[in-house]
Length: 123
Image 1 (cartoon, rainbow, N blue to C red):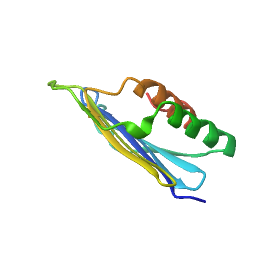
Image 2: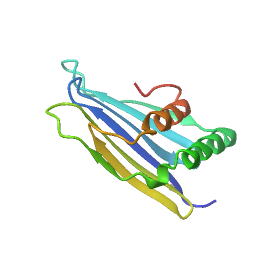
Image 3: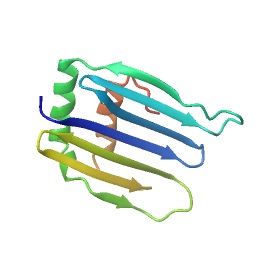
């Protein structure tokens, strides 16, 4: 199988919440959520998700249709807000992109596709 990897994270500053998704096996994603907004709670919540071949194919098809491979950096100056980062690789195609208080036009659709892989855990 060709080299495939996924690493995505999103962090909201005001609510002090960070979520991430990382590929930890050929057909497995690890979802992690860390919230420090609740006093005394900083232990991460983690859950692994087994991804079927059909789910993978649908996800990668959407990545291609959304042209996620062309993403770069997106930034807008703001006092507070959020940031995100993405690293994807599939075969000889790869992208590293990030944003702070800004995103590409098709970010929401991509995030929706990624969220489906982890059972709707991304907030």
